[in-house]
Length: 497
Image (cartoon, rainbow, N blue to C red; front, side):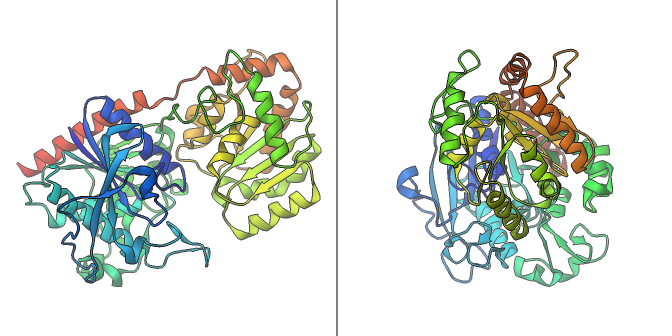
């Protein structure tokens, strides 16, 4: 099959969260399975053309994209690093993408107010690019709300196009909490009549519009990034954000699936990781001690083999459980543990964490930035990794942690349930510590269990090695995606007949 994969971020070109890692890895596995796949993303100012060999596509220097305001929309390309069979195409439109930040203005610390216009133009432009290149896709695989309008444009405006009309649409939800909402008054700017926003229509969401809802409505198949999360979002208002009814309809029609994200072990494996101080493996763990020691030096933490180091790499927001952490952080330090935190997010958590660091100098390190190398150091140098999420569609860091011999402490939700089996001392089984309720007391109970088990060297060694032996590679998940692609293409063919 011919597959076009579309995302607002793709590693290693543009990285904000786990979405970039997924779309940076999955196309490689799809190509390995024998299919023709290319990737589209915006050409952000931060992308290093020289590093990646990005060049303008001959004959596509000025795409015919409605509502581009007269500014040129052009197409660039380069090979995917490590997978030259996968071509990465980039849509260049300087008024929208020649900015310092991807989603957030670094000056205001807020999302760009013209977000829907930016990604609406990108969605229309990629379809025009596909026509210009005569790609004739069997499947358009869209990811999250930024790219959802491509599915709407495909059906509404290119339904009779012989180069595009056969494409089925797969829409992946990586986080339902990001809905892409905007006012109905903006619909004409995107090429749609304002009266499309009538109550109960595909366009209407709580009196406005949600691009994520449109992605669901206009797809041939919806998938989420873990089986548990698929059940959660279609099964309850708590997780469904008002879309549980639409998702339940998809589920009941056999058009909602959960596929667990995989891990790119060419990037996230301590045996080959070029970013960490020392490499190690399940058969030779000596390098992990060096990683721990050098991480502590780098982060100005006191070095002690008896003190467990708990790592956190995350967006600092409520969803990720920082309200729980703020209630008991000092209690964690009182247990005789240390914390190293990497990430950015809500200002209230920036202030809280910096105050915690000031109070517990030598036992807390707070790093309010995006630093890919430090993220690898924390995975390799920490003893435990804390993910107390309110909800977690899949989560990648718990799977990274398992491979690095860093024991995850997680809440029982979404993909965390699908990947982390709770430790049972009686049977010497499990690979991490799991708590059920979204409650700081339950979280502290799990952390205490982990700290207590850490003191038992034999039990801890067995725990870490069981986790390191697990395989969450992309191969099996990629084959499930290929199956979805076939279903989506078949449904599109039935719709045309």
